[in-house]
Image 1 (cartoon, rainbow, N blue to C red):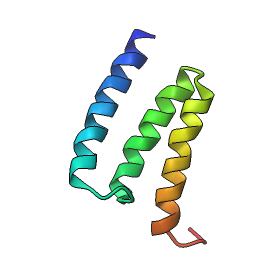
Image 2 (cartoon, rainbow, N blue to C red; image 1 turned 180 degrees about the horizontal axis):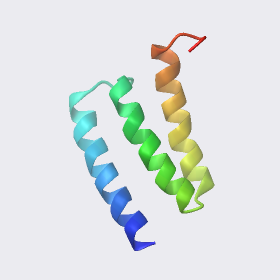
Image 3 (cartoon, helix red, strand yellow; image 1 turned 30 degrees about the vertical axis):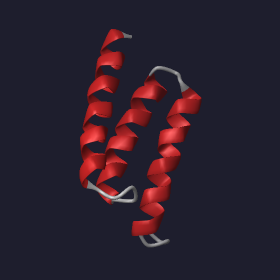
Image 4 (cartoon, rainbow, N blue to C red; image 1 turned 45 degrees about the vertical axis):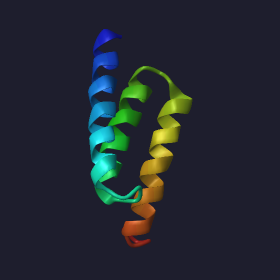
Length: 68
């Protein structure tokens, strides 16, 4: 569990830096949101994981074609 906590710490730190330099709908944020969601999924924190995956979906939906 300790390694997941460490991963979350660094992903959240990266997200904080990225959010200072990008708009809330910037496609580059989707990767970090996905990584955070994946860590929560691995920790079996499904509601938290879903929250991050929904953010990924929202961002990608605005940037990608519907047929992508």
